[in-house]
Amino acid sequence: MSRDSDWRLLLPEPVRHLPADLAAVVVLAVATTVAATVPGVRETPLRIILGLPYVLFVPGYALVAALFPEAGDPPAEDDVDDASSREGIDGIERVALSFGLSIAVVPLIGLVLNFTPWGIRLVPILVSVTGITIVLTAVAARRRAQLDEVDRFRVPYRAWIAGARRELFEPESRTDAALNVLLVVSILLAVGSVGYAVAVPGQGEAFTELYLLTETESGELVADDYPTEFTQGETRSLIVGIGNHEHQTVQYTLVSQLQRVEIQNNTTLVRERNELNRYSPTVADNATWQARDTITPTMTGERLRLTYLLYKGSAPPNPTVNSSYREVHLWINVTASQ
Image 1 (cartoon, rainbow, N blue to C red):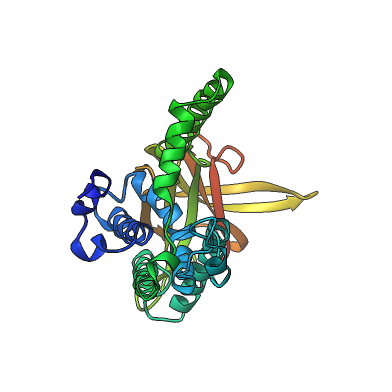
Image 2: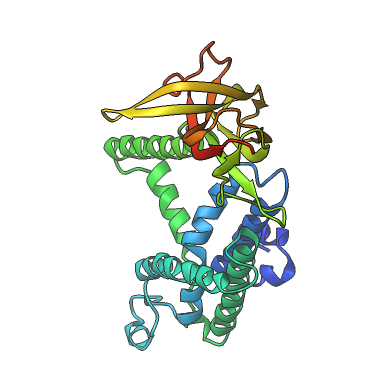
């Protein structure tokens, strides 16, 4: 066996007998599946490095290979008559169609999955795309095998490697040599930049969520049906939550107040305030903290403002809406007890 084909011994026997391009499709499909699902590997940049070309190119290439098993270019200059009867496409057309069909096929798979019990999630999409790609690869291999060897499409990778070797190591002039060195350096810089961007992604916007929820009879938490009618001294409850997206662990202070307010000239003036509860949670990055806040109003009136004020660190002696980092509120009515 020649040295150029020794690498095929590393592949499983069914894959070993596939044409080189179809074998590469199967290997990339398996590698992407492993990189996207195996713990310890799926957290690495390898998932993105393999996943992007797999989704954007491979399914379309398998479909094109199944549709056009014939070579599009004549094998020799003196074989024009045989080449003219072929129905294949050339390499540039094959690559362009591969990208276009991948962009069409993958969203179509997602659309179909959306109407199934599995939905649009990583594992169902990965299984569907990989399964369809493998089936199309098998069809492409069978259709190529049915053609005469001279008519089968094959990637001229040996000619490409030989040509690249000549250009890099046997330049015709010093100018060509300098351009070759510049090309190699440019490629290395581009690959390095992309690799660094994938391995060390820039941080997104830092923010904190502050929200209120209620609990249904079945125990489900929803952002709906908030209590608005209270009786003085009566205890009701809400679920208050904090979502930390500050890219670091943060110690918060949360203060709940019942405020009597007055609107003057489009300005809200707080005439009276009673502090109800205070919390000091420490929340890790990308984590959520929730607590059941019990509300026992002491003042009465209509259009009272139940306000939650959130601070990073400690709260000031007199917490206000203007001094808070985040704020949410409800308008409630409190009637006097009978």
